[in-house]
Length: 99
Image 1 (tube, helix red, strand yellow):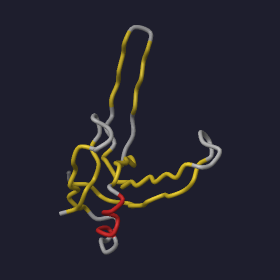
Image 2 (tube, helix red, strand yellow):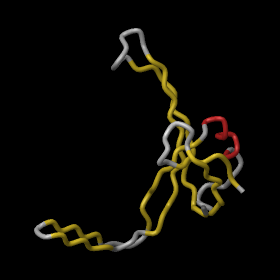
Image 3 (cartoon, helix red, strand yellow):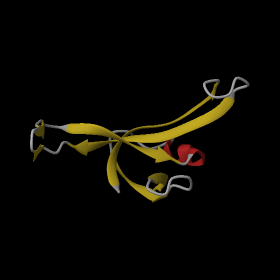
Image 4 (cartoon, helix red, strand yellow):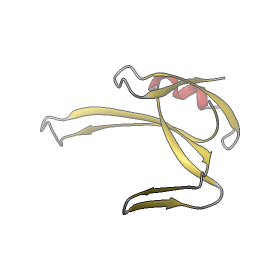
C-alpha cells in the first residue's frame, strides 16, 4: 500500500486499570495521509455528509520489532507499506515493513 508517512512510533507502559499489580502494554502504529474523500449517506432520517479538501490522517498498526525500518526514511514522502494479517486480530492488517 503506497502512503505518505507522517510518523511511526511505539508506546510502552504499565496499566493498573484491570490489574492492580500492573499489566504491561505496547502499542505501535504508523500514521499516514490519505486523500480526503467526499461522501454523502442518506438512510431514512439518518444523514451523514463529508465535504472537504486535502488529506486526513489514518493509522495502521505496526509490528513493534519493525520500528527501526522507519529510522532513515524522509517523513512526508511516499513509501510502500508491507501489510499482513495481524496475528491477534483476524479482521485487521498491520504493517510489517516498507519497500
